[in-house]
Image (cartoon, rainbow, N blue to C red; front, side, top):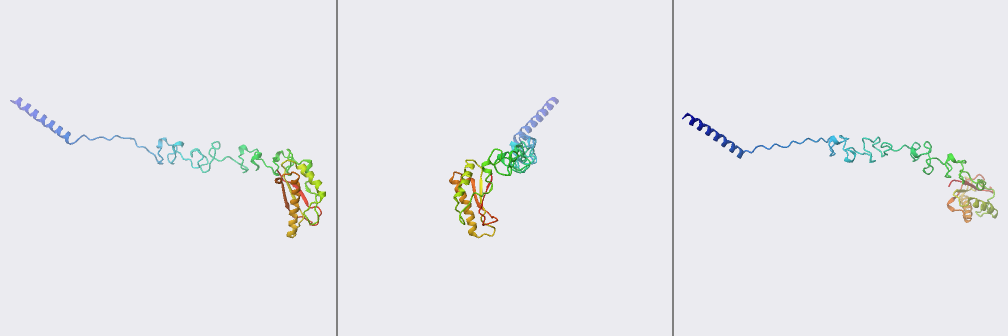
Length: 258
């Protein structure tokens, strides 16, 4: 009788426990545990995690490892020594040095401490004849030859010419002037040296008529030389102030480069 009672009690408790478990499952499903993901830190909000960002505190771009390129020279700021001006890789992001400021960088400038010309490797040519001063034997006088000097045929014409004269108060060349001008035209030939023809008829206080005559005389000499085959682009004609308006000889020649 006692055994029956214990068995009955056990059965009753088991049934109650089982029923409670079934009811709990039906009404209250087990809670879903959310997946834990690592937190991505991106201080500069450039879309590149700090762990992969060479410049984690400055917004940049993936192609530069998260760094910026402020001056747009394709050299990232973290290795660019001059981030505010475009430069070269060879100069670590800075502009190539140009000590003399002539536009030819020192690395390509044969005369880095003297302002010069790009076509002469950065070297100067003060007489403008295309021969750099260091190789020019006549550096202060534009020349026609490879050494920078004038040919003998041209050098004789430098200065005021006693052989070129005009009719009185006119811009008409005297016939006697033709020999000298023919010789000058031949000496100039097909070269590149340029000629400045200056008439000195007018003095500082000359009237407009006299100044006009002076310009006309210079133009007359140019026209004659052009008629003999000299390129007009190689001749400059101008009037300038002379010392004596009554002087017989008023034409001056100078060679001024190429």
